[in-house]
Length: 150
Image (cartoon, rainbow, N blue to C red; front, side):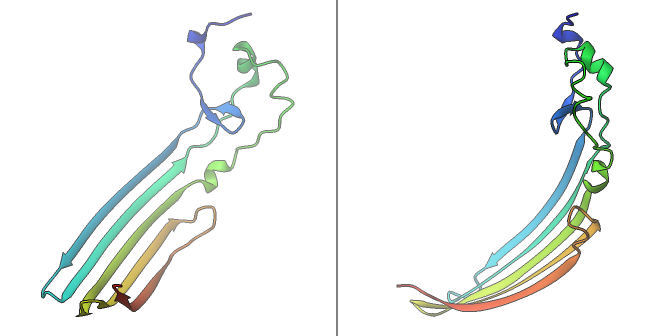
């Protein structure tokens, strides 16, 4: 029996077999950046970044093997393969908020030497432990240095 292509319901590909499932991802990003030069020798810069991201895979519904035979998949093909995606969606969700702040300055000591200093702060709030578990945390970093113009 042959069935025309127009009668086949479009499926989304997942793994090595066709299954009806959706993956939804939403991300919101906000940025505020400033760079000021109060004097000819002093530069000040800063940034504030915010990211809110969510994503999830719907529960995977494996197709009925009898229905697949009707559209041309050989009989017994599904029986010879072991598919268990029943819990995949339970660890595919993620939901986090990331707030980052940066502040720094540059001071020209001479035409060839500049003093630099920066401070970074980041705070991650993991509202839904993903594959690696809950990754909530924050960090601070302070760095300084000299930039030489050769």
